[in-house]
Length: 380
Ligand code: GTP
Ligand code: MG
Image (cartoon, rainbow, N blue to C red; front, side, top):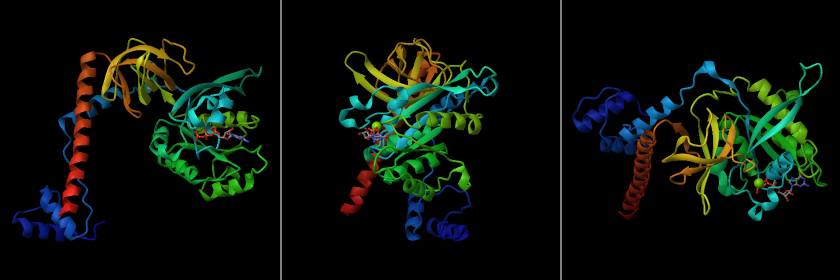
């Protein structure tokens, strides 16, 4: 709402330019800018797509066209989010019964890490009560303020967000931020109230603060599962895994599906160089199956997958939907959040990579131009 009627704008336009205008006529940028400034209107600039953008869009649409008939269940992808030091990594450690936090620089999680975990649940349909093995994919995201963008990204590839809140501190700014990201990304939320073992833990106060964020359990008319955990003693860890499995089964069954029998595509979680293996990328396969030898386009980089490792660092031959893997063989380091696609031809990969590069270059040039324009304005 601009507070300016379309009719008045058109009259004004005709007066300024001596031309006829309809409701959808294109307007010269300078004219539009002038009228916008006069009337305190925020200009939304819609420009024509470039040839590169069209090419990329067409390619991505084609590659992401999944046959609904071929969909099969896939594991949920769960992101652990929350305020710094509230115990995200420790909880995951406990889940994996490993100890990643001890090996982290300064104890702060620096990059997105991803793991597959197998959780055994009781099969209610089985008279012998054999345990069912359920896979869950976890992403650990950093809690430090500097990583806001990364956490936002974590939520995009995620089905379920576990919001970790330490009962010692209660809800903190980044707890709220995490909740907002999860809500914006439209993912299911599970609350883990952590550090319940600590002498200064205040579970009731923490719960009240969470209710104030409109996270309500079913006995209060909501549908959020609350789990009390201690990454120190292991209390509630199994409850958390069960909560995730329940969420997946009862609220996400329709969404947790993918076609494993197609070329892979997914999202890059991180890219980096190592002295030994060159370019590394941690990617999350979201559709299809990725294999060594596949030609992969990842953002503006491409190459043949040379080696593929699972979350235990073991070289593997296949990675299906919801599997996080580390791959080598790309020609350059991709960015986190870059989409990746397995393609048939190196030439296709090269063509789209070139288009992406050009698009990125133009985007940064435009930013530079905008900064220069602002400078000249303030200088004048
Ligand atoms: P960032 O990745 O830096 O955001 O932190 P984080 O949320 O991953 O927290 P981390 O797991 O590194 O734990 C922070 C500190 O809290 C460590 O000293 C842990 O030992 C401690 N901690 C984590 N969980 C618990 C818990 O359940 N009980 C108690 N008493 N301490 C815990
Ligand atoms: Mg951490």
